[in-house]
Image (cartoon, rainbow, N blue to C red; front, side, top):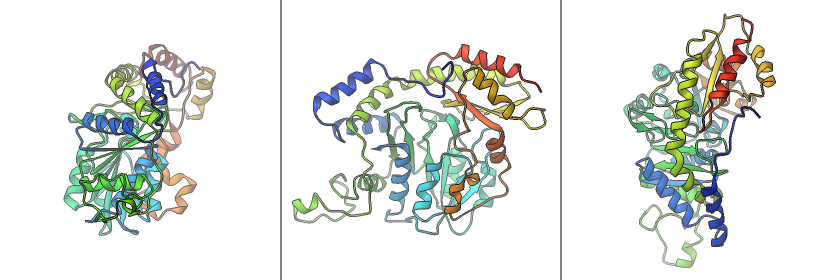
Length: 389
């Protein structure tokens, strides 16, 4: 395909890492996972990293942990403020733990939560806020952090689309009490499948480790006195302390992740060069709204919204893109309250979500990759310039 949505970023180093794991004979969670957790946490200046089998599982583990903390645990019926645009598994764990969602509109230009509406979203039942940086573009995470601190809320930061982005010199994924990351094939680094939870909170870290592996105590560090230890070492190795899952990653995933992490700065630099070219090419095209950068984007992709009133509809764009062999898709998951699954949620919205609905109905994105896309962006410009309107 001339310009696909995703591209393979593995090289000889990643393939050698897979071979290294095969030669070790240890395939499931082990020393490679531990090393990647430590290296990834250190890269972000955080104390703890807990690797899981996907970014979606990272959101599940983080939510589960916050329902078991000793102080201010999330309980069924508690409200959580969330942005109207994100991927489905930002929301599903909240629903699965009985929480009530309050959807807030996004800013039309950044596609991130409109933090001017936070006060309107707050109620006496609010216990948490979820911050999502859409497609590499940092949300107003500093504002959300202050809001959470002011009102005694947990701040969950879903950073699955925005690895290595920065706001005010601070990496996204580090503003929340807990931050989540995804290493899916199309993401900034890929371990095939994989995800990570970061936190500085020793109790949250321990709970995440228990939730990740069946809810047992065996993976919780001995120094963490979260659960009173018994005298029988045999029984202790198989003591289940909270409800859990099997969300463990494989050694293959972690070994590849360690190699990908070494390449991350260079890959983000290449993505940002492409972003600059895209901004220069389409920033003054009145027919389209492109995502306004907030802070330093890690540029997951390039978004375009067909601006209303310009004599052009989104459907007019799709066939020419297909003919040009250019891949495209919905912006993240679109406006989530528009999806059938929302009927299973206890939720409401703050207002009518006009910007999220506009992005849902008139927006799309094309891929960005960690290599030069000059030819692809030039062709996209020619295709769009050939449209009527």
